[in-house]
Length: 104
Image (cartoon, rainbow, N blue to C red; front, side, top):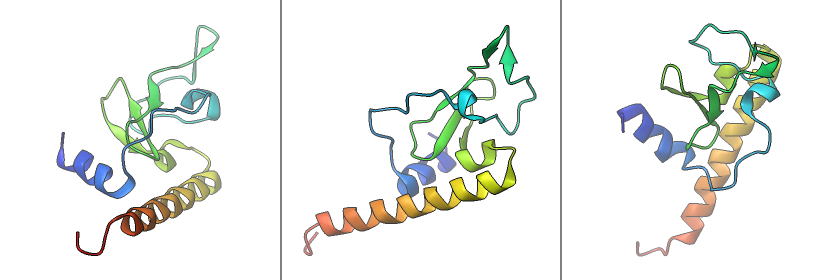
């Protein structure tokens, strides 16, 4: 695990076992580093998958985990996704703090 992966796990946590039904490509996500067409042989390209980290996507081509907001070409939608991810991370952190006893 790289230091950025460890930091992602600390900040946003590990994604629960349930995954969104739609593949990232079907929702308009695209790897920000790789250049490839969104469609391949009439199907959505499937190299981008839901990462093990909340709010992140993983590219099977370059092997990197990206915050999902970086994977949206539409800037307004990317900002909204970023803010929702930050809000979720804050809420998760608060739930974790409440679950710990004060002597921990």
